[in-house]
Amino acid sequence: MAAEVNAQTSARFGQRSLVDVLRTVFGPVAQLFLFIVGSAFLLSLIVVLIALLQIGSRPDILTRALTILPQVIIDGLVRGFLFATIALGYTMVYGVLEFINFAHGEIFMVGGVVGAAIGLWLSMQGMLAGMNVFLFVALVVLAGMVVSGTLAVTVERIAYRPLRGSPRLVPLISAIGVSLVLQDVVRLIMTSTPLGFNARYSTPDFGKPIRLFEMNLGDRPVPVIISPKALVFISVAVLMLIGLNYLVNATRLGKAIRATAQDRPTASLMGINVNRIISLTFLIGGALGGAAGALFGLNVGAVNPYMGFIPGLKAFTAAVLGGIGNITGAMVGGVVLGFLEAFVSSYLSLFTNGALSGAAYADIAAFSILILILIFRPSGLLGEATTQKV
Image (cartoon, rainbow, N blue to C red; front, side, top):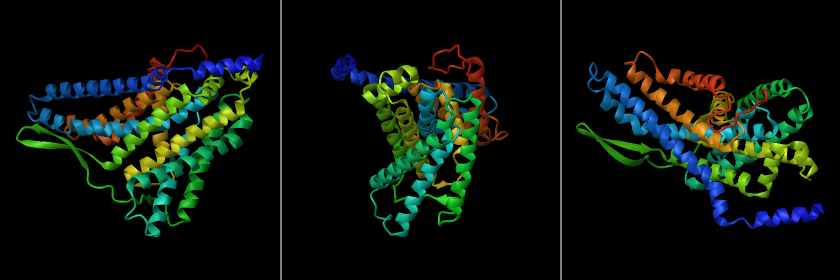
């Protein structure tokens, strides 16, 4: 009887039309696009209104604000997709275990260090100078995904699985301990090798910045550019987000993950290997974190053992903002947080006439969002309200 039910379920799953699959996969992507446009428009409108309020005492303030606006939006996209990619690891694990893996920032860091190590090795072998940039990106991203994914599964098996039936505070403390251990182990490895503490990210030549368009403000045109590395970062991140959305919503493995997240005992009774699904969830989340780390190192040009702490906390903020446990919410939260941080970094100093440094206060803005969302909407932008105390 069970075999017959499974066969019927498989048949129904296999009969899904292409339109249904495309709607399932690209519907959340369209939703993300709307949030990107809406967030950029709303924050741009706020910038214009603040500039208009100051235009009496500072006649050039509106022109100066509009001059940097397109570049700020591009910077916000890059930051947002970074946070979104890391936040997916948090939300995948929380969706299945209702557990926040605070060591995920260090999984991200390991991906960046692996990418830097590959770049250094290729440079020492004399293979880097003439290497195809797409091959290099594929190599460092895949290596970061493999190592970080394997590390995440190992951490789950050693540090989290034995504590699965414990009170929630116990695995949380374990996660913080794992985070500190990974930081110091990676520091020991880096300082004992040619990488050094602050490892430079060796890359082939990506070429000159790409000019997207020009804005005519006043008496001079203002070019709007994007670096090839940032363009690669955004493109790869979007592809990963689409791939994960397809995996979770349009495959049998994704159905098993969703079933385990909804009710682990029932999923086990239906023949799903819950331990295997949990390990696969950590593998996927760790791989995404490793890819984000490799791309982050590629974009900023250097990595160190402690680089995962602040981005990890911001990605957690993004996951909470979007609705932790919700994949689309993690994407949306990351993009919204990225835009907010980019706008604060760029405009706070301008609007306060240099009295306050935007870069110094960007972290305050990001973590203030975390406090506000926990107070006024704990379920996040796209999350569902719950009566269970977390």
